[in-house]
Length: 276
Ligand code: ATR
Image (cartoon, rainbow, N blue to C red; front, top):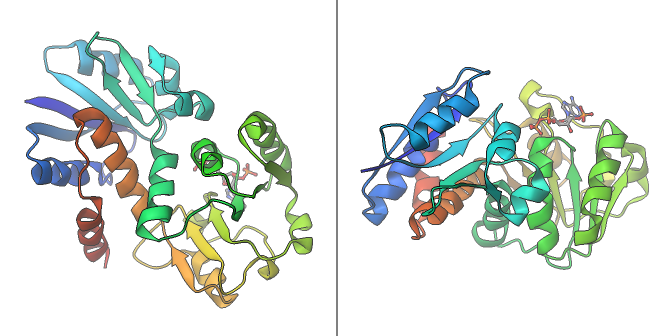
């Protein structure tokens, strides 16, 4: 039986084992997927042991706080992982090397375009935040060819830095929060900050939202996030949390490992029921 796992610290709340086990069952793939708590200074050793030890480790997901370390230790990288400088998926290749990929952005794009019927092509998109989560989605977003991608962040310099790094891929521009007052409502807004974790709101004006604006928060929980509640108060009708992104990034990883696409929608629906 091929072994897969997610490594992180903490790891006990990870839904990845449940998601991947459901995928394996759906597609009749003989695999076992577990969660591994890794000490903060022990990631390289844990990865080596998983792939090169006695077991038959074939693939890993990597979560907080190891995504940058995974990027560093991979033997090879996909283009999108290279650009993101973060890796959430490790694959043991047939040659025995470790390939690093980042499926977070592809998962978010899949959730938007397929599950929510929200294409990004020719749309005006606002991304809020400039941390690791946002870095992971910019390449897949720009690949969809939005007409404009504006990035804002509390620390403006980080938004500027990302805009510089990704400008070869499409029309991306960094702005200060205060400059948003002059902007027409966006077609799509993605909150990639961790502000929702504390129930905080990024300082964006209500004028960036119209009824048609699709508002996405990468966070999720039992209750709508503070940002989605605020967006709804501004009149937005389409409000989406990050549960779909979680399931879809897992589906992209699963397909990379096993070569078969799982039915992510039924797994998303059952996770949604469990949250309630
Ligand atoms: P992650 O890996 O989740 O992206 P991160 O790299 O620490 O975590 O980034 C967190 C992001 O949320 C950053 O963009 C951060 O803004 P700064 O770069 O200015 O720190 C943003 N953020 C966190 N709390 C926030 C708050 N209360 N208001 C606005 N932005 C916030």
